[in-house]
Figure 1 (tube, one colour):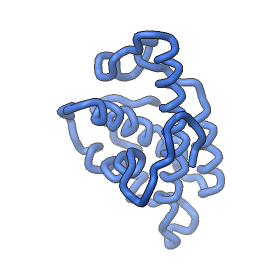
Figure 2: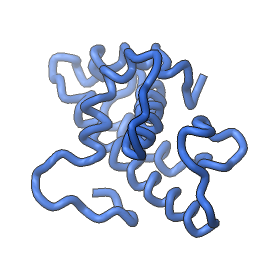
Figure 3: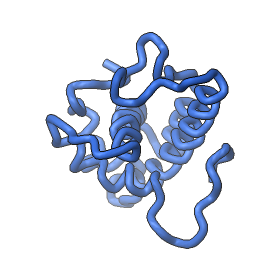
Length: 151
């Protein structure tokens, strides 16, 4: 649904965002992660991003969390090759500025879509009284691979 360079998926299959959210909880329990390819690298990056999202929406209502996560997706972020990028060596540096800009646009689009779908999942339980699910929020206290976008 988010606008950007990535094409919309046709059909009802599982896409990258579904995989990120589906494997977030089990991945958070790993101390190491065996990278098999580029998809795993994005999975690691977005596991850290979902963790950051959960930290930001702690004790917020769904409406406030939706706005918070949209704002987070629009914030400036480091790309591979930038000083301070959280995963140096995990994700290869872009070869040109154009490639870096394209990477940034894809990731921005994914960040926006991940935030949107995360809100739908975390606030799906009506018995939580409009607050985020404790079964999701408990993962905001853990670090993945001993890393975090926020302290």
